[in-house]
Image 1 (cartoon, rainbow, N blue to C red):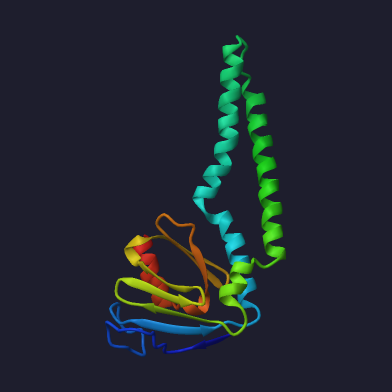
Image 2 (cartoon, one colour; image 1 turned 180 degrees about the vertical axis):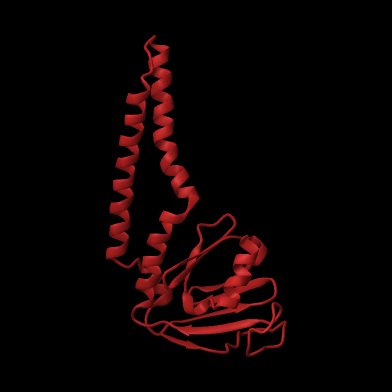
Length: 192
């Protein structure tokens, strides 16, 4: 792990550079050189953060709830009686099956590094970020992306990575070295 600071982005700079993180408006600039473990860390963080996303849990619960509702309607339309205990048991069985499948998928994701992480965070690759007063600018081997803080709906820390989810995206993970506490406060302030 080799964080380096400060970082000079290519192109015009809108704000003067500051070494410290003394106030909210000062830009925060960081460059990080990935090591042999960075891609694996990002891969692990992305796999584990899935368990913390409400949308994923909503989807997992929606399937057995739909099947339960459909089964109840089918039983009642055939003139039978819906037995609450049997319906709850069926709901739990489907949910248990889903959890086993998700656990296996997570295990597979943890066992091998996704090539998309190796492409952007392989050994020697550089990642740079600049946090201005209202926007996060990220440079990596795949290109540049900018996200306004106001467009970020979720920020989660997972061990040594940070998950950032802008609106209408699946989100992305960054090494914790690229998100110092002052930057994390900016990101979380917008997501709150």
